[in-house]
Image (tube, rainbow, N blue to C red; front, side, top):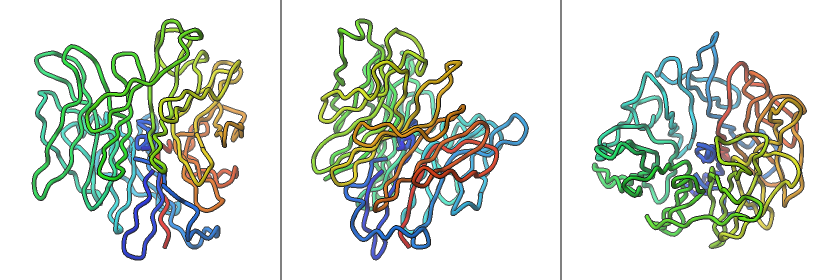
Length: 356
């Protein structure tokens, strides 16, 4: 999602956001640097944006909700919004893997934006953020002739955009979340089988407990910068293979110091946000039958959101209120302070909160 969560002061607007992508695939942008200032707790003073998809039959169509009112993206079926970002009332959405829109990089107010492809095989971006009026986007492109996947990011520059490949030839990498702080660009994802982040194109492998996980497999889903500290949320596995599964361990790193969120219970971490001195991570823990149950952690303490099949994909903090986007069964859902609000059939992958 990441999220994709970045605080940005725009005229009289104070914007707080987190995506899956923009943090998870999400993962989602970067969390707010300080979401406690000028943030009354009444919902009337805010606009809640949720990105995801609405399902009709077996097909999903990328969509977003503004205070519960849904807008479909003009993409068509088999699509989903991974990241949502709002800037000066403009709504930006990424929808990677959308079968009917492979040439689209992202959407601005439902208008398709296509970024240049320099690696040979196009793939839409997974997350974006805005800093200083510039749009930063990251994703994964196929590299020809190497035929491997490589993380890439773009920064707009006047009327042009300049992709910066971050992949190493003959290796597989992916960009899943992006954050910008003081002009530095951070991208979270993975390189081969290890969770990493890149700072200005320089890869930083994230440490794991090699005693616990002798054959490592890990992924980073979200990144945020708070007071100069780099926070990354992701998942490691006891065994090589696909993530997540009941052997997964929800994890976050602060300046590359590993913090495990569970010990004996399988879990996943999809998004991270830091507010003041508090660290929030959204994801899920595995229950009976090996299915996830939506949950979040505050400073390492677990809060279960649903006891049935569900997952939390994105998180935002506004004052003392905690907002989480995810899915319960087949329903797109968000929670405010643990109380669920159903948005209808579909999935919620990202969240962005705007102060009116």
